[in-house]
Length: 580
Image 1 (spheres, rainbow, N blue to C red):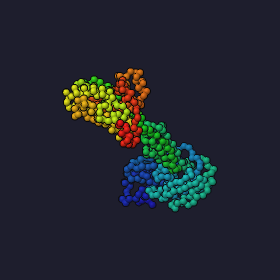
Image 2: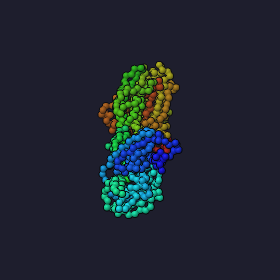
Image 3: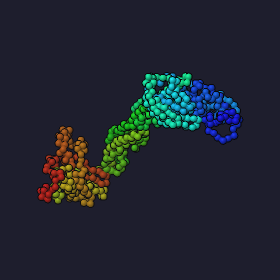
Image 4: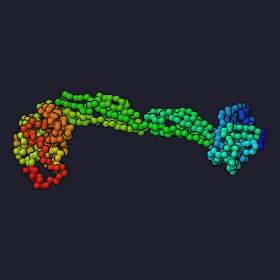
Protein backbone atom coordinates (compact mmCIF):
# COMPACT_ATOMS: atom_id res chain seq x y z
CA UNK A 1 0.00 0.00 0.00
CA UNK A 2 1.33 3.41 -0.97
CA UNK A 3 1.01 6.57 1.04
CA UNK A 4 -1.31 9.35 -0.13
CA UNK A 5 1.75 11.07 -1.62
CA UNK A 6 2.61 8.05 -3.77
CA UNK A 7 5.72 6.90 -1.79
CA UNK A 8 6.29 3.48 -0.32
CA UNK A 9 5.49 3.15 3.39
CA UNK A 10 8.53 3.39 5.67
CA UNK A 11 8.03 -0.18 6.85
CA UNK A 12 8.28 -1.42 3.29
CA UNK A 13 11.72 0.21 3.06
CA UNK A 14 12.86 -1.41 6.24
CA UNK A 15 12.35 1.57 8.55
CA UNK A 16 10.45 1.56 11.79
CA UNK A 17 7.17 3.30 11.47
CA UNK A 18 6.90 6.45 13.60
CA UNK A 19 3.78 8.50 14.04
CA UNK A 20 4.73 11.89 12.58
CA UNK A 21 3.10 14.12 9.97
CA UNK A 22 4.25 12.83 6.56
CA UNK A 23 5.05 15.29 3.80
CA UNK A 24 7.34 15.24 0.81
CA UNK A 25 9.44 18.12 2.12
CA UNK A 26 10.65 15.88 4.96
CA UNK A 27 12.20 13.26 2.65
CA UNK A 28 14.73 13.09 -0.14
CA UNK A 29 15.42 10.41 -2.68
CA UNK A 30 18.39 8.21 -3.52
CA UNK A 31 18.48 7.02 -7.13
CA UNK A 32 20.01 3.56 -7.14
CA UNK A 33 22.16 2.21 -10.01
CA UNK A 34 23.76 -1.08 -8.95
CA UNK A 35 25.52 -3.97 -10.68
CA UNK A 36 24.83 -6.88 -10.49
CA UNK A 37 21.13 -6.37 -10.28
CA UNK A 38 20.78 -9.31 -7.87
CA UNK A 39 22.77 -7.39 -5.22
CA UNK A 40 20.98 -6.70 -1.96
CA UNK A 41 20.50 -3.37 -0.22
CA UNK A 42 21.01 -2.72 3.48
CA UNK A 43 20.12 0.78 4.70
CA UNK A 44 21.38 1.78 8.14
CA UNK A 45 21.80 -1.90 8.98
CA UNK A 46 18.32 -2.97 7.92
CA UNK A 47 17.69 -5.49 5.13
CA UNK A 48 15.68 -3.78 2.37
CA UNK A 49 15.57 -5.96 -0.77
CA UNK A 50 17.23 -6.62 -4.11
CA UNK A 51 18.66 -3.53 -5.71
CA UNK A 52 16.63 -4.25 -8.86
CA UNK A 53 13.44 -3.81 -6.85
CA UNK A 54 14.28 -0.24 -5.85
CA UNK A 55 15.41 2.23 -8.44
CA UNK A 56 14.98 4.94 -5.82
CA UNK A 57 14.80 5.08 -2.04
CA UNK A 58 12.82 7.65 -0.09
CA UNK A 59 14.88 8.51 3.00
CA UNK A 60 14.76 11.13 5.70
CA UNK A 61 17.23 14.04 5.42
CA UNK A 62 20.71 13.45 6.83
CA UNK A 63 23.43 10.84 6.53
CA UNK A 64 22.59 7.23 5.79
CA UNK A 65 24.85 4.17 5.52
CA UNK A 66 23.97 2.08 2.47
CA UNK A 67 25.58 -1.34 2.13
CA UNK A 68 25.45 -3.33 -1.08
CA UNK A 69 26.16 -7.07 -0.89
CA UNK A 70 26.07 -10.02 -3.25
CA UNK A 71 27.88 -13.26 -2.38
CA UNK A 72 30.78 -13.86 -4.72
CA UNK A 73 31.42 -10.12 -4.96
CA UNK A 74 33.30 -7.68 -2.75
CA UNK A 75 30.65 -5.77 -0.76
CA UNK A 76 30.69 -1.99 -0.64
CA UNK A 77 29.52 0.54 1.93
CA UNK A 78 28.59 4.10 1.00
CA UNK A 79 27.59 7.00 3.17
CA UNK A 80 25.10 9.28 1.43
CA UNK A 81 23.78 12.60 2.57
CA UNK A 82 20.06 12.97 1.79
CA UNK A 83 18.63 16.45 1.29
CA UNK A 84 14.89 17.04 1.71
CA UNK A 85 13.10 17.27 -1.63
CA UNK A 86 16.24 16.40 -3.67
CA UNK A 87 17.54 13.32 -5.45
CA UNK A 88 20.96 11.84 -4.68
CA UNK A 89 22.49 9.40 -7.15
CA UNK A 90 24.08 6.16 -5.93
CA UNK A 91 26.16 4.23 -8.47
CA UNK A 92 27.78 1.01 -7.26
CA UNK A 93 29.41 -1.68 -9.36
CA UNK A 94 30.49 -4.64 -7.25
CA UNK A 95 33.69 -6.45 -8.19
CA UNK A 96 33.55 -10.26 -8.43
CA UNK A 97 35.79 -12.39 -6.24
CA UNK A 98 38.04 -14.61 -8.36
CA UNK A 99 38.31 -18.36 -8.00
CA UNK A 100 35.91 -21.18 -7.36
CA UNK A 101 34.76 -23.13 -4.33
CA UNK A 102 36.01 -26.69 -3.90
CA UNK A 103 34.18 -29.75 -2.58
CA UNK A 104 32.98 -31.37 -0.36
CA UNK A 105 29.50 -29.84 -0.52
CA UNK A 106 26.08 -29.91 1.05
CA UNK A 107 23.06 -27.81 0.10
CA UNK A 108 20.16 -25.86 1.57
CA UNK A 109 16.74 -25.21 0.10
CA UNK A 110 14.96 -22.31 1.81
CA UNK A 111 11.22 -22.14 1.27
CA UNK A 112 8.77 -19.29 1.89
CA UNK A 113 11.49 -16.71 2.55
CA UNK A 114 10.40 -14.81 -0.58
CA UNK A 115 13.04 -12.13 -1.07
CA UNK A 116 14.07 -11.85 2.55
CA UNK A 117 17.80 -11.65 3.24
CA UNK A 118 19.51 -14.93 4.19
CA UNK A 119 22.61 -14.72 6.37
CA UNK A 120 24.89 -17.49 7.65
CA UNK A 121 26.78 -17.40 10.95
CA UNK A 122 26.22 -13.68 11.50
CA UNK A 123 23.57 -10.98 11.45
CA UNK A 124 25.39 -8.12 9.78
CA UNK A 125 25.46 -7.53 6.01
CA UNK A 126 28.94 -9.07 5.75
CA UNK A 127 27.39 -12.50 6.37
CA UNK A 128 24.72 -12.12 3.63
CA UNK A 129 24.64 -14.98 1.11
CA UNK A 130 21.49 -14.20 -0.88
CA UNK A 131 17.73 -13.82 -0.65
CA UNK A 132 15.06 -16.46 -0.25
CA UNK A 133 13.96 -16.44 -3.88
CA UNK A 134 17.46 -17.62 -4.93
CA UNK A 135 17.29 -20.79 -2.81
CA UNK A 136 13.68 -21.99 -2.96
CA UNK A 137 13.65 -25.05 -5.29
CA UNK A 138 15.63 -28.00 -6.53
CA UNK A 139 13.83 -28.61 -9.82
CA UNK A 140 15.25 -28.56 -13.33
CA UNK A 141 16.26 -24.96 -12.86
CA UNK A 142 18.26 -25.06 -9.66
CA UNK A 143 17.91 -22.35 -7.08
CA UNK A 144 20.17 -23.54 -4.29
CA UNK A 145 22.54 -22.55 -1.54
CA UNK A 146 25.65 -24.76 -1.64
CA UNK A 147 27.73 -24.87 1.56
CA UNK A 148 30.62 -26.86 3.01
CA UNK A 149 29.42 -29.64 5.34
CA UNK A 150 28.91 -28.37 8.86
CA UNK A 151 26.58 -26.61 11.24
CA UNK A 152 25.35 -23.13 10.36
CA UNK A 153 23.42 -20.46 12.20
CA UNK A 154 20.85 -19.40 9.61
CA UNK A 155 19.18 -16.00 9.99
CA UNK A 156 16.38 -14.67 7.75
CA UNK A 157 15.82 -10.89 7.92
CA UNK A 158 13.05 -8.70 6.61
CA UNK A 159 13.74 -5.00 7.16
CA UNK A 160 14.45 -4.65 10.88
CA UNK A 161 12.69 -7.91 11.75
CA UNK A 162 14.26 -11.33 12.30
CA UNK A 163 11.85 -13.66 10.51
CA UNK A 164 13.64 -16.82 11.61
CA UNK A 165 16.92 -17.91 13.12
CA UNK A 166 18.17 -21.36 13.94
CA UNK A 167 20.98 -23.89 13.82
CA UNK A 168 21.10 -26.08 10.73
CA UNK A 169 23.38 -29.07 10.28
CA UNK A 170 24.24 -29.87 6.68
CA UNK A 171 25.93 -33.26 6.08
CA UNK A 172 28.09 -33.87 3.03
CA UNK A 173 26.09 -34.71 -0.10
CA UNK A 174 22.81 -33.99 1.68
CA UNK A 175 20.23 -31.28 1.02
CA UNK A 176 18.45 -29.71 3.99
CA UNK A 177 15.04 -28.17 3.34
CA UNK A 178 14.13 -25.25 5.63
CA UNK A 179 10.53 -24.03 5.77
CA UNK A 180 10.44 -20.42 6.94
CA UNK A 181 9.43 -19.67 9.64
CA UNK A 182 8.87 -23.26 10.81
CA UNK A 183 12.49 -24.37 10.50
CA UNK A 184 14.14 -27.50 9.16
CA UNK A 185 11.57 -29.64 7.35
CA UNK A 186 13.69 -32.52 6.11
CA UNK A 187 17.15 -33.70 5.07
CA UNK A 188 17.41 -35.66 1.83
CA UNK A 189 20.11 -37.18 -0.34
CA UNK A 190 21.77 -34.84 -2.79
CA UNK A 191 23.51 -37.03 -5.38
CA UNK A 192 24.63 -34.07 -7.44
CA UNK A 193 26.94 -33.02 -4.60
CA UNK A 194 29.04 -36.15 -5.05
CA UNK A 195 29.74 -35.20 -8.66
CA UNK A 196 30.77 -31.63 -7.99
CA UNK A 197 34.45 -30.84 -7.48
CA UNK A 198 34.43 -27.07 -7.75
CA UNK A 199 31.84 -24.46 -8.71
CA UNK A 200 31.73 -20.65 -9.03
CA UNK A 201 30.72 -18.65 -6.00
CA UNK A 202 27.76 -17.04 -7.78
CA UNK A 203 25.90 -18.25 -10.83
CA UNK A 204 22.62 -16.85 -12.07
CA UNK A 205 20.48 -17.68 -15.10
CA UNK A 206 16.89 -17.90 -16.19
CA UNK A 207 14.88 -18.95 -13.17
CA UNK A 208 18.06 -20.37 -11.66
CA UNK A 209 20.70 -19.31 -9.16
CA UNK A 210 23.49 -21.08 -7.32
CA UNK A 211 25.44 -19.54 -4.47
CA UNK A 212 28.46 -21.61 -3.37
CA UNK A 213 29.71 -20.50 0.04
CA UNK A 214 33.42 -21.03 0.71
CA UNK A 215 34.80 -22.20 4.03
CA UNK A 216 37.17 -19.61 5.54
CA UNK A 217 40.90 -20.20 5.70
CA UNK A 218 43.29 -18.88 8.34
CA UNK A 219 47.06 -18.77 8.68
CA UNK A 220 49.06 -17.19 11.53
CA UNK A 221 52.83 -17.26 12.09
CA UNK A 222 55.42 -15.55 14.29
CA UNK A 223 58.75 -14.40 12.89
CA UNK A 224 60.50 -15.55 16.09
CA UNK A 225 59.04 -18.26 18.28
CA UNK A 226 61.56 -17.62 21.09
CA UNK A 227 62.29 -14.15 22.48
CA UNK A 228 63.90 -12.69 25.55
CA UNK A 229 61.86 -10.51 27.86
CA UNK A 230 61.39 -7.07 26.32
CA UNK A 231 62.08 -8.24 22.77
CA UNK A 232 59.44 -8.07 20.05
CA UNK A 233 58.45 -10.43 17.28
CA UNK A 234 56.31 -9.94 14.20
CA UNK A 235 52.98 -11.71 13.79
CA UNK A 236 51.84 -12.23 10.22
CA UNK A 237 48.45 -13.55 9.22
CA UNK A 238 46.03 -14.01 6.36
CA UNK A 239 42.43 -15.17 6.16
CA UNK A 240 40.04 -15.67 3.26
CA UNK A 241 36.25 -15.72 3.01
CA UNK A 242 35.98 -14.27 6.51
CA UNK A 243 34.36 -10.87 7.07
CA UNK A 244 35.36 -11.01 10.73
CA UNK A 245 38.88 -11.94 11.85
CA UNK A 246 40.10 -11.86 15.43
CA UNK A 247 43.41 -12.55 17.15
CA UNK A 248 43.41 -13.27 20.85
CA UNK A 249 44.83 -10.37 22.89
CA UNK A 250 44.72 -8.14 19.79
CA UNK A 251 40.99 -8.19 19.04
CA UNK A 252 39.54 -7.60 15.58
CA UNK A 253 42.05 -7.33 12.75
CA UNK A 254 41.97 -6.97 8.99
CA UNK A 255 41.80 -10.20 6.91
CA UNK A 256 45.54 -10.01 6.32
CA UNK A 257 48.35 -8.06 7.90
CA UNK A 258 51.23 -8.07 10.30
CA UNK A 259 51.86 -6.54 13.69
CA UNK A 260 54.71 -6.32 16.14
CA UNK A 261 53.99 -7.86 19.55
CA UNK A 262 56.01 -7.80 22.77
CA UNK A 263 54.61 -10.50 25.04
CA UNK A 264 55.48 -10.47 28.73
CA UNK A 265 55.05 -14.22 29.10
CA UNK A 266 54.87 -17.27 26.88
CA UNK A 267 51.78 -16.64 24.76
CA UNK A 268 49.84 -18.60 22.18
CA UNK A 269 48.13 -16.23 19.76
CA UNK A 270 44.90 -17.64 18.32
CA UNK A 271 43.62 -16.41 14.96
CA UNK A 272 39.94 -17.13 14.28
CA UNK A 273 38.30 -16.33 10.96
CA UNK A 274 34.50 -16.12 10.96
CA UNK A 275 32.59 -16.31 7.69
CA UNK A 276 29.29 -17.47 6.21
CA UNK A 277 31.01 -20.77 5.42
CA UNK A 278 32.02 -21.44 9.03
CA UNK A 279 35.13 -20.72 11.04
CA UNK A 280 38.83 -21.44 10.63
CA UNK A 281 41.57 -21.15 13.21
CA UNK A 282 45.33 -20.97 13.34
CA UNK A 283 47.74 -20.38 16.20
CA UNK A 284 51.32 -19.31 16.80
CA UNK A 285 53.17 -19.60 20.08
CA UNK A 286 55.87 -17.21 21.26
CA UNK A 287 57.98 -18.50 24.12
CA UNK A 288 59.28 -15.73 26.38
CA UNK A 289 62.51 -16.35 28.23
CA UNK A 290 62.11 -14.56 31.56
CA UNK A 291 65.21 -16.06 33.20
CA UNK A 292 67.94 -13.62 34.20
CA UNK A 293 71.60 -14.61 34.08
CA UNK A 294 73.33 -12.56 36.75
CA UNK A 295 76.87 -12.49 38.09
CA UNK A 296 78.54 -10.43 40.83
CA UNK A 297 82.18 -10.73 41.87
CA UNK A 298 84.80 -8.88 43.92
CA UNK A 299 88.40 -8.85 42.82
CA UNK A 300 90.05 -9.37 45.23
CA UNK A 301 87.48 -10.55 47.77
CA UNK A 302 89.76 -9.76 50.74
CA UNK A 303 91.46 -6.45 51.51
CA UNK A 304 93.76 -5.35 54.31
CA UNK A 305 93.33 -2.30 56.47
CA UNK A 306 95.60 -0.88 59.15
CA UNK A 307 95.32 2.33 61.11
CA UNK A 308 97.64 3.55 63.86
CA UNK A 309 96.02 6.39 65.74
CA UNK A 310 94.50 8.64 63.09
CA UNK A 311 96.85 7.55 60.34
CA UNK A 312 95.78 4.89 57.85
CA UNK A 313 98.90 3.02 56.83
CA UNK A 314 97.21 0.38 54.67
CA UNK A 315 93.94 0.71 52.77
CA UNK A 316 93.56 -1.72 49.87
CA UNK A 317 91.25 -1.34 46.88
CA UNK A 318 88.94 -3.88 45.27
CA UNK A 319 86.77 -3.91 42.15
CA UNK A 320 83.11 -4.92 42.00
CA UNK A 321 82.24 -6.54 38.65
CA UNK A 322 78.75 -7.49 37.54
CA UNK A 323 76.53 -8.52 34.65
CA UNK A 324 72.80 -9.18 34.34
CA UNK A 325 71.46 -10.45 31.02
CA UNK A 326 67.73 -10.27 30.15
CA UNK A 327 67.06 -7.75 32.95
CA UNK A 328 65.52 -4.29 32.73
CA UNK A 329 65.93 -3.15 36.35
CA UNK A 330 69.30 -3.67 38.01
CA UNK A 331 70.59 -2.27 41.27
CA UNK A 332 73.34 -3.08 43.72
CA UNK A 333 72.81 -2.40 47.40
CA UNK A 334 75.23 0.28 48.49
CA UNK A 335 75.92 1.31 44.87
CA UNK A 336 72.49 2.12 43.42
CA UNK A 337 71.00 1.61 39.96
CA UNK A 338 73.52 0.24 37.48
CA UNK A 339 73.76 -0.80 33.84
CA UNK A 340 73.45 -4.41 32.72
CA UNK A 341 77.23 -4.81 32.77
CA UNK A 342 79.89 -2.84 34.56
CA UNK A 343 82.67 -2.49 37.09
CA UNK A 344 83.12 -0.20 40.09
CA UNK A 345 86.34 0.47 42.06
CA UNK A 346 85.82 0.35 45.83
CA UNK A 347 87.97 1.41 48.77
CA UNK A 348 86.13 -0.04 51.74
CA UNK A 349 86.81 0.93 55.32
CA UNK A 350 85.78 -1.03 58.41
CA UNK A 351 82.88 0.06 60.57
CA UNK A 352 84.99 -0.60 63.63
CA UNK A 353 86.65 2.55 65.00
CA UNK A 354 88.01 1.47 68.38
CA UNK A 355 91.46 -0.09 68.69
CA UNK A 356 91.79 -3.78 68.05
CA UNK A 357 91.88 -6.29 65.23
CA UNK A 358 89.70 -5.75 62.17
CA UNK A 359 87.78 -8.72 60.84
CA UNK A 360 84.64 -7.59 59.07
CA UNK A 361 82.60 -8.65 56.08
CA UNK A 362 80.76 -6.34 53.71
CA UNK A 363 78.09 -7.80 51.46
CA UNK A 364 77.05 -6.36 48.11
CA UNK A 365 73.76 -7.67 46.72
CA UNK A 366 72.73 -7.30 43.09
CA UNK A 367 68.98 -7.38 42.43
CA UNK A 368 67.78 -7.76 38.86
CA UNK A 369 64.26 -8.04 37.46
CA UNK A 370 62.36 -7.71 34.21
CA UNK A 371 58.81 -7.00 33.15
CA UNK A 372 58.13 -10.69 32.52
CA UNK A 373 58.24 -11.78 36.15
CA UNK A 374 61.89 -12.81 36.12
CA UNK A 375 64.07 -11.90 39.08
CA UNK A 376 67.50 -12.84 40.33
CA UNK A 377 69.85 -11.84 43.14
CA UNK A 378 73.56 -12.34 43.57
CA UNK A 379 75.67 -11.53 46.61
CA UNK A 380 79.41 -10.97 46.83
CA UNK A 381 81.12 -10.73 50.22
CA UNK A 382 84.24 -8.70 50.91
CA UNK A 383 86.48 -9.63 53.83
CA UNK A 384 88.25 -6.72 55.55
CA UNK A 385 91.11 -7.78 57.81
CA UNK A 386 93.72 -5.78 59.67
CA UNK A 387 93.98 -3.75 62.82
CA UNK A 388 93.36 -0.42 64.47
CA UNK A 389 96.16 0.36 66.90
CA UNK A 390 96.88 2.95 69.52
CA UNK A 391 99.96 5.00 68.84
CA UNK A 392 101.43 3.90 72.17
CA UNK A 393 103.68 0.89 72.46
CA UNK A 394 101.99 -2.46 72.03
CA UNK A 395 102.32 -5.31 74.48
CA UNK A 396 104.31 -8.29 73.38
CA UNK A 397 101.94 -11.19 73.94
CA UNK A 398 101.80 -14.74 72.61
CA UNK A 399 99.06 -17.26 73.16
CA UNK A 400 99.89 -20.07 75.60
CA UNK A 401 99.62 -23.66 74.28
CA UNK A 402 98.90 -26.83 76.30
CA UNK A 403 99.38 -30.57 75.89
CA UNK A 404 96.42 -32.91 75.38
CA UNK A 405 94.09 -33.09 78.43
CA UNK A 406 96.35 -30.69 80.43
CA UNK A 407 96.33 -29.21 82.97
CA UNK A 408 94.65 -31.82 85.08
CA UNK A 409 94.45 -29.34 87.94
CA UNK A 410 94.54 -25.57 88.27
CA UNK A 411 95.96 -25.69 91.79
CA UNK A 412 99.66 -25.31 91.09
CA UNK A 413 101.96 -23.74 88.52
CA UNK A 414 103.74 -27.06 88.51
CA UNK A 415 101.18 -28.04 85.88
CA UNK A 416 102.83 -25.61 83.43
CA UNK A 417 105.52 -26.66 80.99
CA UNK A 418 108.62 -24.53 80.55
CA UNK A 419 107.41 -22.94 77.32
CA UNK A 420 104.10 -22.03 78.95
CA UNK A 421 105.85 -20.38 81.92
CA UNK A 422 108.15 -18.47 79.56
CA UNK A 423 105.21 -17.06 77.59
CA UNK A 424 103.33 -16.03 80.77
CA UNK A 425 106.48 -14.55 82.35
CA UNK A 426 106.97 -12.28 79.35
CA UNK A 427 103.30 -11.21 79.44
CA UNK A 428 103.43 -10.48 83.18
CA UNK A 429 106.57 -8.35 82.82
CA UNK A 430 105.17 -6.29 79.95
CA UNK A 431 101.73 -5.89 81.56
CA UNK A 432 103.09 -4.64 84.88
CA UNK A 433 104.84 -1.86 82.96
CA UNK A 434 101.66 -1.14 80.95
CA UNK A 435 99.59 -0.86 84.15
CA UNK A 436 101.72 2.05 85.27
CA UNK A 437 100.26 4.12 82.41
CA UNK A 438 96.86 2.39 82.18
CA UNK A 439 95.97 1.18 85.68
CA UNK A 440 92.41 0.23 84.59
CA UNK A 441 93.62 -2.04 81.79
CA UNK A 442 92.75 -5.70 81.97
CA UNK A 443 93.92 -8.89 80.39
CA UNK A 444 91.20 -11.31 79.26
CA UNK A 445 92.37 -14.93 79.38
CA UNK A 446 90.32 -17.12 76.99
CA UNK A 447 90.70 -20.88 77.35
CA UNK A 448 90.15 -23.26 74.40
CA UNK A 449 90.20 -27.03 73.85
CA UNK A 450 90.51 -29.13 70.73
CA UNK A 451 87.46 -30.78 69.18
CA UNK A 452 87.97 -34.24 70.71
CA UNK A 453 85.93 -35.30 73.70
CA UNK A 454 82.55 -34.38 75.16
CA UNK A 455 81.41 -30.76 75.30
CA UNK A 456 81.20 -30.70 79.10
CA UNK A 457 84.67 -32.19 79.50
CA UNK A 458 86.23 -29.68 77.09
CA UNK A 459 84.41 -26.80 78.73
CA UNK A 460 85.91 -27.70 82.12
CA UNK A 461 89.34 -28.30 80.54
CA UNK A 462 89.39 -24.88 78.85
CA UNK A 463 88.32 -23.26 82.13
CA UNK A 464 91.23 -24.94 83.99
CA UNK A 465 93.66 -23.63 81.38
CA UNK A 466 92.41 -20.05 81.77
CA UNK A 467 92.40 -20.30 85.56
CA UNK A 468 95.93 -21.76 85.63
CA UNK A 469 97.22 -18.90 83.47
CA UNK A 470 95.47 -16.40 85.74
CA UNK A 471 96.93 -18.01 88.88
CA UNK A 472 100.44 -17.83 87.44
CA UNK A 473 100.08 -14.15 86.47
CA UNK A 474 98.77 -13.31 89.94
CA UNK A 475 101.79 -15.07 91.41
CA UNK A 476 103.97 -12.84 89.20
CA UNK A 477 102.42 -9.71 90.72
CA UNK A 478 99.49 -8.93 88.43
CA UNK A 479 96.48 -7.76 90.49
CA UNK A 480 93.64 -10.25 90.25
CA UNK A 481 91.23 -7.36 89.55
CA UNK A 482 93.05 -6.73 86.27
CA UNK A 483 92.49 -10.26 85.04
CA UNK A 484 89.39 -11.88 83.56
CA UNK A 485 88.87 -15.44 82.36
CA UNK A 486 86.59 -17.02 79.79
CA UNK A 487 86.21 -20.65 78.83
CA UNK A 488 85.06 -21.57 75.31
CA UNK A 489 85.64 -25.30 75.29
CA UNK A 490 85.72 -26.46 71.68
CA UNK A 491 83.17 -23.89 70.59
CA UNK A 492 85.61 -21.59 68.78
CA UNK A 493 88.05 -24.00 67.17
CA UNK A 494 90.34 -22.70 64.46
CA UNK A 495 89.73 -24.27 61.06
CA UNK A 496 92.35 -26.06 59.00
CA UNK A 497 92.57 -23.07 56.65
CA UNK A 498 93.06 -20.68 59.55
CA UNK A 499 95.85 -22.84 60.99
CA UNK A 500 97.50 -23.03 57.57
CA UNK A 501 97.44 -19.25 57.39
CA UNK A 502 99.04 -19.02 60.83
CA UNK A 503 101.78 -21.39 59.66
CA UNK A 504 102.45 -19.23 56.62
CA UNK A 505 102.76 -16.17 58.87
CA UNK A 506 105.01 -17.82 61.47
CA UNK A 507 108.46 -16.23 61.07
CA UNK A 508 110.14 -18.92 63.17
CA UNK A 509 109.61 -21.65 60.56
CA UNK A 510 111.87 -22.25 57.61
CA UNK A 511 110.37 -23.45 54.34
CA UNK A 512 111.58 -26.98 55.02
CA UNK A 513 110.21 -26.97 58.55
CA UNK A 514 106.88 -25.65 57.30
CA UNK A 515 106.59 -28.53 54.83
CA UNK A 516 107.20 -31.04 57.61
CA UNK A 517 104.58 -29.40 59.78
CA UNK A 518 102.02 -29.37 56.96
CA UNK A 519 102.49 -33.11 56.56
CA UNK A 520 101.04 -33.55 60.07
CA UNK A 521 98.20 -31.09 59.53
CA UNK A 522 95.52 -32.92 61.49
CA UNK A 523 97.72 -33.12 64.58
CA UNK A 524 98.84 -29.49 64.21
CA UNK A 525 95.24 -28.25 63.98
CA UNK A 526 94.42 -30.05 67.25
CA UNK A 527 97.54 -28.59 68.92
CA UNK A 528 96.69 -25.03 67.83
CA UNK A 529 93.27 -25.31 69.49
CA UNK A 530 94.67 -26.29 72.94
CA UNK A 531 95.51 -22.76 74.04
CA UNK A 532 94.78 -19.65 76.08
CA UNK A 533 94.43 -16.42 74.08
CA UNK A 534 95.10 -13.08 75.82
CA UNK A 535 93.36 -9.82 74.92
CA UNK A 536 94.22 -6.32 76.17
CA UNK A 537 90.94 -4.54 76.94
CA UNK A 538 92.12 -0.96 76.37
CA UNK A 539 93.23 -1.50 72.77
CA UNK A 540 91.70 -4.81 71.79
CA UNK A 541 95.19 -6.15 71.07
CA UNK A 542 95.25 -9.95 70.92
CA UNK A 543 98.10 -12.28 71.66
CA UNK A 544 99.96 -13.55 68.62
CA UNK A 545 99.08 -17.15 67.79
CA UNK A 546 102.63 -18.37 67.19
CA UNK A 547 102.90 -22.03 68.00
CA UNK A 548 106.22 -22.77 69.79
CA UNK A 549 107.62 -25.25 67.26
CA UNK A 550 111.16 -24.55 68.51
CA UNK A 551 110.36 -25.03 72.21
CA UNK A 552 112.27 -27.76 74.09
CA UNK A 553 108.96 -29.25 75.18
CA UNK A 554 107.45 -29.15 71.66
CA UNK A 555 106.90 -32.91 71.51
CA UNK A 556 104.93 -32.88 74.75
CA UNK A 557 102.82 -29.99 73.50
CA UNK A 558 102.02 -31.42 70.08
CA UNK A 559 101.47 -35.02 71.16
CA UNK A 560 97.87 -36.06 70.46
CA UNK A 561 97.89 -38.23 73.58
CA UNK A 562 94.86 -40.12 74.89
CA UNK A 563 91.70 -38.11 74.32
CA UNK A 564 88.24 -38.46 75.78
CA UNK A 565 86.11 -39.97 73.01
CA UNK A 566 83.39 -37.82 71.48
CA UNK A 567 79.98 -38.53 72.99
CA UNK A 568 81.39 -40.74 75.76
CA UNK A 569 79.91 -40.35 79.26
CA UNK A 570 82.81 -39.70 81.62
CA UNK A 571 82.43 -41.55 84.91
CA UNK A 572 83.75 -40.18 88.16
CA UNK A 573 86.47 -42.84 88.25
CA UNK A 574 87.62 -42.07 84.69
CA UNK A 575 87.59 -38.36 85.39
CA UNK A 576 89.73 -38.89 88.50
CA UNK A 577 92.10 -41.08 86.47
CA UNK A 578 92.55 -38.38 83.83
CA UNK A 579 93.13 -35.69 86.44
CA UNK A 580 95.84 -37.68 88.25
